[in-house]
Image (cartoon, rainbow, N blue to C red):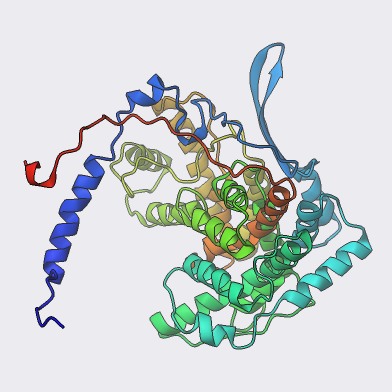
Length: 461
């Protein structure tokens, strides 16, 4: 056995080396932007008008933002359909009847039809029966390694649940359905418990773990689990339920749902598929956008120089000019890849946000959101080269609603995941039911060709 001291870098040397190597990796990863036009390659799988490249078929949801009238494309108020039903009609249906809607919409997405009263009651009982975690899971998994990121907790927990399944790799629709419905029921627990443990270990807070109540809706259970006293108003539960409904599905073309299809097409297990979708949703360009909205609005609200509309306009101009907030040039919550005239989810949420603001005595803050929306849309149209219209998206008002509900910002994106798991479930079942070829897109190679050079002949210059 050799007694030689191993040749390893110190921490300082590692930092320097990685920094240097990162610059090399970045430099050799850049692609000339003109090559995208040369090869007719659509970045983000979308053209300048926001039209996506068709990569598959789905009958789960549909989005319309334009109509063809006499050969001319006309922008329209956005329309979102779940299984052929207009989202406005679905929302009006359960709201007018004083019911919670998330369970009904989950049934619609997964099974492709609206349930009868008996079918809905049985489905709610089924979800309530699954709304528990394996024995000691909180202690042995969630508490064992607390994380500062709740999406990390969710993904790690989902992957760990694989080990608790007696048939984790089975691809029968019956087996997959059972796995997915368990995840639908368990996501609120995994998210809230992860947050409570994080607060306990990182912020030295009191650890509060409430048991779920099978008789409560998903929205009610979230508030029950999250709040120390488990109390909430009917309007709070109603609006949280509405948020879940509006985030439950959004066509097969959004990043996380596309991920669900891509990973499912390999024939892998449900837990790996949903963990991959969670990784996609975690990104600030996808599920994390409402967090950026709230952070941006807090900066605006706390800026002592903004005392009137003209000051607000000047500040928003600075944001667009990359001179204020995070200097990305983005007014978060404004604009959407598909919707041009209006986002139907934002339209619906806006009116309910006003109701909640009145209950909470936050009318002034609601008015600030409304003004930022109005001024931002004018400025973006004036200052940006936009080939389509621009509108407020669902993230603009959902973050404000979560803030009014006293939901911690760490749970904003997990709430999106709690809402979206029924949509992912429907798309996974769709992909497995129609399983054909593995999804494998094409890339055009634009690299230069080189001849191999022996190591001894290579130069460091």
